[in-house]
Amino acid sequence: MNFVFDVDGTLTPSRQIVDSTFATWFLDFIKHNTVYFVTGSDYAKTLEQLGPEICESVAGVYSCAGNALYVAGKQVYANTFELTQEEFEFLNMLLTLSAYPEKTGQHIESRLGLYNFSVVGRSANHDQRKEYVQYDSAINERANLAKLITLKFPRLEATVAGETGIDIYLKGNDKSQIVKDVKPFVFFGDKTEPGGNDHTISLLADKCYTVSGWEETFSILKDNSFTARV
Image (tube, rainbow, N blue to C red):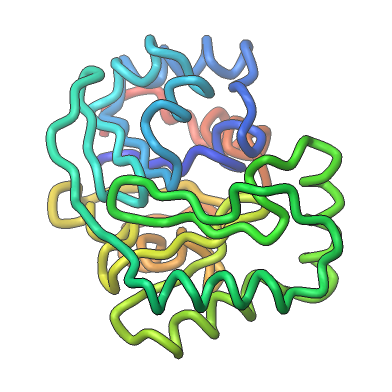
């Protein structure tokens, strides 16, 4: 059995570094199990969060929603994708129409095979991100914007990702694309609800654990005694 993990909100706090105690335990877990990561972030960000020892010890790191694969720190493949001018303009219109008052910049970020769209902006500091999370939780802005993007452009798929973002990629090029290479598998993720960027892959897992944070992931792994290859 393979073990596939989301990163933000599953192995680490969103955009933050892995807990040191969990990291030590997880390294031992990797030694006894076949482990993959699949994350919306690029590899550099995952490396920053989990460190080279963990990232280079797993069987593979699927970055950018599976649109790039890294094994032992080296890129194996990467998909390419570019938004059209019309699509860019639509995202900028959504940004302008959003009632959220504080927009910090870097709202559309290009990654390998996907774009990340954020109303508050990726330049937001911790407090600004926290404020937007509260706003989004109250009115579901990201889920509604993702639906608008997908309806407007049938070639695209937009999903809620991380704490403040929306991931946008070509339809079918979401996290579920790794299943052609990795199966059977147990999946751990925090955005498995419809519209979340873990949803499609969670439906294909042999066993899925929806978690609220790395602490719950740690608890489940220990409680189920996942310590040997199965």
